[in-house]
Length: 421
Image 1: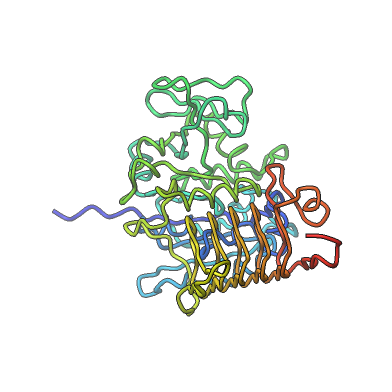
Image 2 (image 1 turned 120 degrees about the horizontal axis):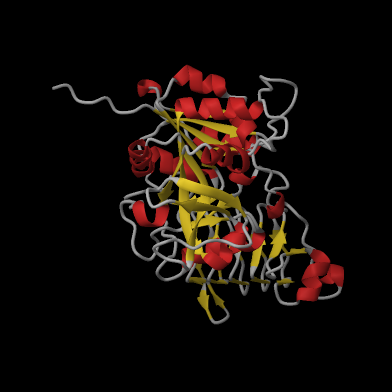
């Protein structure tokens, strides 16, 4: 008996987000291109999930400030074309008029030619700027079994957090009864009334259903052109949507009870900072060391990190931290922080609870606490950041949670330039 044909799956990654709430990290780059975890970019997580799932025909739909994202994709995600595999950045091509993408649904609509060229059976439409591990084959199996036109990945969250999400109200069969955006009166799950299912922004469509839905949406002048608010809502109303319970039903190889079901929207500075703190706990809440489901990226040809000097007050050390290649800790101290490649920490400097991006230099005796420092910043000797909040707010961007953020290449004044540390 002939073996059944494996379904053809096409990946569409929505990577056009401007990321306004992540300023100044998104001042010069799209949100999916923001560095994360020392070596990675946010887009690497969605792409790694698709590739690890065996889905290796992927279009990445880009828009705002896409140069660094395009460069990263070109350098990192060169899959072998021998079997037709590729990750291809697709800018707004204005195929249907003279405008950019009017929303995530419009981005798909304007690129229906890609879907028609590939002629897949199913389409994974994933966001590009969340942190998680997901085996998309398990979600696809669930989708096929459901017979629905779309399956929405749902994340269990406490009912008191429902106001921040699009909330899925499922029937016992898994069909979605209602999809409500940021409800003030959420309904708890049947098996756990203290929780709701929040949309993760990841969808699997049967091809015909997606084409029909985005064409219908394009003809609706009242539509907001949004995948969740318009496409999914419409398909729910037509009884054609199913939910995949990510926490309960998605079992990623190598995951543990500690990091199972981890998902974070790093859309704000505070969320971005907290996600890094999740990485460095002794038992990581999100474990980058799970080599059974690796997160792929490009690694520059750099030497290992180096820790030098072993004298009183000049001891190069890092504890409860992640330190990337090419970094030199020269007599400084690093605690509970993530250091990206080619960071240099000079003698007597102290870095705590911080995220330091590429090629930052922290001068002798400087203090950096609860901060995010973007690429190519020089912190002068003796500078104090995260010590005096009033002084920090005068010089830098400070989040609601008190995280100091310094933009890419920004000038940091030396203590004698502003009359103090």
